[in-house]
Length: 202
Image (tube, rainbow, N blue to C red; front, side, top):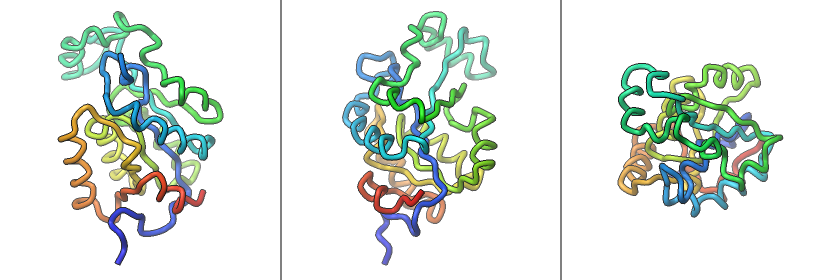
């Protein structure tokens, strides 16, 4: 019987979507994600092996809350210090350990949680014949979650590298791991970084 943690088949025609590994989420950042330091070496190892297949996303905050629609205005009034009017520009940069891989790795900026809130990303992947996305990054239960669900809706196979995710909530992270295992069979696979290298055939 297939191990629940290994993909049903080889991973082919895939890109690595590394979500929001930015200084704002790093230790000392405004939205510090404590696990980031722990998973960063694993993420960097994946990137180093698949540099030209890696797309980094960056969550770009608005200049002013009123620059975003609806409830985003409420959100950024609460987090006004995260708007670009108040935030250091370097806070939105990739952490240095990953920025060094650009290029050949690419960067896609997004205004909301999902990587696919950048309208050009899905079209680019389809044009290149990409059938699967390998997911790492921050945070498990916010931007990664939103990107996973968008990718599923768009028909991509999703492979989540569970030891290359970070969150500020243990409860949220664990709940999402359970949901992926029990609710998305055939659309979402969970693997370790070691298993990824065994199954990913570019």
